[in-house]
Amino acid sequence: MSAQTKAGAPRRGPMGGHGGHGPGGMMPGEKAKDLKGTLKKLVGFMGRFKVGIAVVLVFAVASTVFTTVGPKVMGQATTELFNGIVAKIGGTGDINFDLIAQILLFTMGLYLISAACSFVQGWMMSSISQRTCYELRRDIASKIDRMPMGYFERNSVGDTLSRITNDVDTLGQSLNQGITQLITSVVSIIGVLVMMLTINPLMTLITVVILPISLGLIMIVVKKSQKFFFAQQKTLGEINGIVEETFSGHAIVKAFNREDGTVDTFNETNARLYNSAWKSQFISGLMQPIMGFVSNLGYVVVAITGSFMAVQGIITVGDIQAFIQYVKNFTQPITQLTQVSNVLQQMAAAAERIFEFLDAPEEEPDHVTARSEDACCGVEFEHVHFGYDPERPVIEDFSATVEEGQTIALVGPTGAGKTTMVKLLMRFYDVQAGSIKIGGHDLREFARDDLRSMFGMVLQDTWLFNGTIRDNIRYGKLDATDEEVEAAAKAAYVYHFIQTLPAGFDTEINEDASNISQGQRQLLTIARAILADRRMLILDEATSSVDTRTEERIQKAMDNLMAGRTSFVIAHRLSTIRSANLILVMRDGDIVEQGTHEQLLELGGFYAELYNSQFAETIDEAEEER
Image (cartoon, rainbow, N blue to C red; front, side):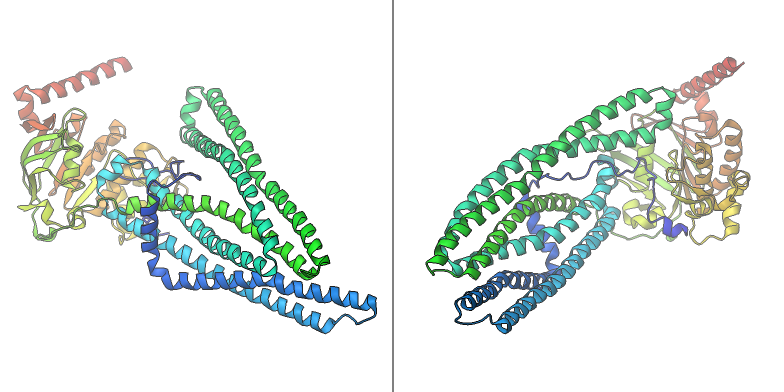
């Protein structure tokens, strides 16, 4: 599979965070907060399918109507057969089999037409629901590219994935099942009620009086089972979380001998799941017997009343048979409506989460007045002010000038604002005051994708996808030849390691890249950056995961790579940035010192303090090893 194809579904994001399909999605039984508003948005979205929905409605109604008329026609055959038998016994006539055959053929025709209409309606509704899912997934995928980086730092990756998978699937299934079921159930109830009234109003009244009994019993069952269903889904989420954590951290569990504790936790949660699951299933399972009891009660009442009326000649035997069938057909759609209500609640809750994401604020549109190919790579930071929370600034007043081709190192303690400066430089965020300029142009004058095409990045958190080593390196330049990929691997000192693998460059990296070491993953990302050959570089602790000997070799490769390029290097190990043209020492969001390595040591300030403390730590570690 090509790198381009694989890139469409990355396993790990480059700016941190692990993806996952955790239990963070919508749970069955969850209700929408704004049902009316959500349904309005859903109806508006599905307006594009109004012709198809109209066809579904017509065929669903037609199918139900033909099915509803069937028992009444069938009753005529029963009446004709009964009258014929009575006449034959009395010697006054015979059974008219021709008429009965005609009635049966007509009834068969009704049911065949009903089945054909049901087939068309089902095919159309399946197409509409899946088309809806397709377009929602497409819109969400497109929306992700327009979302500000802050959204993904405030919300979990699993929640976003759940919206594009679980919630869209729930919406599609609910549309397919719920809407059709709602239409057919309502039409069935109305149609059956009308047909029963045409047969006998008194028996219809008796049936309707019995109806509240079944509804009351159903509501009691639903109310009792709902809390157990909710507990079941909640506990199932806990089970999923335990399993996911246990497998992803399996080595840690074994290293700290926590197998027994993990099993105990799982068993306790599993017991709670069993307790809630059997109760929910048992109580909800009572619905069918209850409805069966009510239906049978209705049959008995109708049979007794109908027999009495038949003796008096008020009603025919065929009408009694048809009415009994209608009693069954009357209670069934009512049961279905109670089930549809839960399905529609799930649909509304899923739709609300989907539209909540689609309606979320996007990045401000680009106002392009500059192009990257027309700009040099000198960078100016002019009184930059920024905070993820505007009330709590991370960078107060940052100013610096970087000449084209210089290597700039950003150093300082954790939380000083080093990575934040990189995010601002890449326009993952925009400054709140001041400006950052490249080649004299404010970053906001460039299109974001054009601006980012100027940068190559190597981050401390390595990002590799499930695919071959060749495709992972080629991700930096999708049209690169095999020779260019291998040359980049040699420049990153990873070629020898790749050659030792059984499949070489065609070795598959697994889903979490655990089949190669952390240092080897870092080398592959460096090879990718070398292959990309961008005009500017951002290196965030690019050699932090490799051993000292490999670090020296990588540093030489990086020096060659950075030659002639404007490079920003974030480093905690100050020994790696001694050759930088300019070192910016950051503290609490401001530059407190700047200069070369030698100048800053002579100054004897904060940088010298950081460097000497690291140098002392290195000596202590060496003495401990001896």
